[in-house]
Image (cartoon, rainbow, N blue to C red):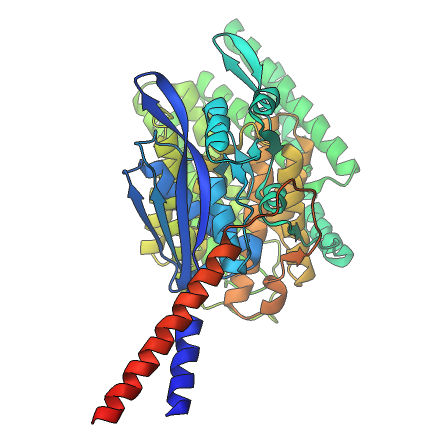
Length: 596
C-alpha cells in the first residue's frame, strides 16, 4: 500500500507543472487615445509533441499567436531543449481590449525559458519587443505608452528594443530613458534575448563559443579554390573573346553599341574584383564576382548574335532549355552521401533557379521584350552550368556512406513548418508588404516535399525563412548576426562537418558593403550551418550531447534593483496545494479501503 502511494506521489509530482506568470506591456485604444496597459501572461510547459497552444481574453490578433511559436523555437535553442518533446500553453489576460501586435514575443520567450529551466522571475521587470528567430529583439510601436504600463504594474525596470530610445511624437524626439526616469522606471535597451535574461532572472545564458577548426577551414578553402579557379578562367577567356567580337561589330547601332560597351566595362570591373578576391583567398566571393561577370558576358554574346541576325531568340531559349534538362539529369544522377550532400544540394538548388529564370525568359520573349529574354536566358544557361560545377566538386566519394533521403523526411517537414510559421508571421505584421516571392518559395518547398526531394525541401524552406526575416531584422545589429553565424559555423566544424555553404555565405557577406545584403547572407550562413548539424544529427553521425550544448548557463549575478520574484512565490503555494491534494487523496483512499 505504501509503495503504491509513494509511486502515485512521484508520478503526480513529476507530471505537475508550475506556471510562470509574467507581465507584458500592451497598448489599448480608449476615448482619450492610446494608453499603455499591463497584461498577464501565464506559461505552462508539459511533456508533449511540439505544440503551442494559446488562450487569450480579450481576443488578440494573429501576430501574437505567431510570436508565441517563434518564442517557443527561440527558447528551445537558448536552453538547448528539443521543443518537439514539449507542449507550450500560453494564457493571456487583460482587463481591456488591446491593440494587436507582436511586442509580447520577447516577454513570452523569457517566460518559456524560465519555465523550461525552472527559474524564478523578477516581478519588477517588464519588457517590450518582437522576438526574431535568431533571438534578436525587433522594434515595436507605442514605446512611451508601454513605459506607462510598466509604471502601472509597479515595475522599476523597462526593457525596450535597441535603437528605440528616441521616439518621435508630433514631430519631436522624446528620450524614452528620460521619460521613464520621470515615472520612476529605468529604461534599458536590449538587442537580444540573451541581454534581457539577466534582468528577469539574475542569471546569465551565454552562447557557448567554439573555436574555428583550422583543418576544416583549409579543406573548405581548397574546395572553393578549385571552383573559383575554373570560373575565373572561363570568365577571363570569355571577356577576351567578347571584347574582340564587340569591337568588330560596328554595324550594331550606336544605342546598342553604347549599352553593350557599358556592360562590358561592368564585367571587367567584376573580373578585377574577382581576381583581387582570389589573391586574398576569398574564393567564394571571387567565384560569385566572376560568375556575375560571366552572366553579363553571356548576355552580350547572345545580344550581338540577335542584333546581327546570327541567332534566333526562340532557338536560343530552346537550346538553353535542352541544356538545363541535361544538367538536371547529371545533378540527380549523383549519389547523395554524408560527404557530398551539401554539394548535391547546391546543384539541385541551382537547377530549380535555372528553371525559374528560363520561365521568365520565355515570358519576356512572348511579351516581345527580347532584351530581357536574352538576359534571363543567359542567366538560366549559366545557372544550369553552375549546378554541374557544384556536384562535380567531389568526384571521388566512393568511401562515404550513401544517404537514404527518406530519413530526412521528418526534418524536411520541420523546416517546412518553420518556413510557414515565419512567413505567416511576417505577412500578419506587414500586411502591405509584397509577398509573392515568399509564397512562390514556399510553394517550391511544398512541391519538393511532395516529390520526395527532402534535401531540396530544406533548402527552399531556408530560402523562405531568410527572405521573410529580412523585414524583421532590417535595422538589427549586424555584429550580432555575424557573431551568431560564425558560432553556428564553428559548432558545425567542431562536430566534424565541413559547412561549405555556410562558410561561403559568411565569406560573401563579409565582402559586401550594403547592410541589408550583409544581414541576409549572414542569415543564410547561420541557417545552412544549422542544416548541416541537423542532417548529421538525424543520420546519427555526430555527438548528440555536443549538439545540445550550444549554450551554457552560468550563475553570474547582474546588477538589479529588485530581487522579488513571481515564480518562487507561486511554487510554494502550488507545492502546498499538491501535497495537500495528495494527502486528501491518500486519506480518502485509506478510508474507502477501511470501509470495505
